[in-house]
Image (cartoon, rainbow, N blue to C red; front, side, top):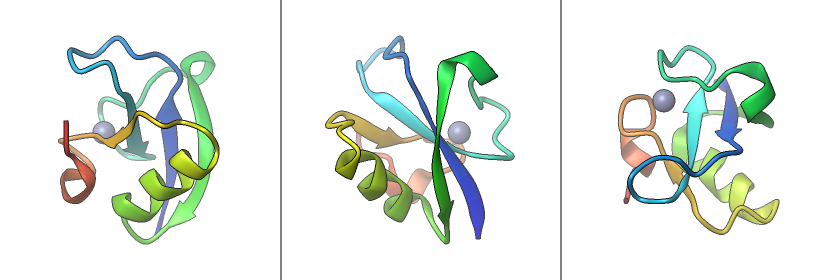
Length: 70
Ligand SMILES: [Zn+2]
């Protein structure tokens, strides 16, 4: 289980809000991220992000490859 966060910005090439785990080296800075919760995998974290209204949520390719689509 890890804590997951979503990037509030969509500055990546695909225009998605990327979801990261707490230990990802690409975790956005504190002011640019929103806490999602404590999950066992990236797919659950992305599902939670979409439930919060982040329709373009996508897993980070580095820390959530199982949830990366874009
Ligand atoms: Zn990441």
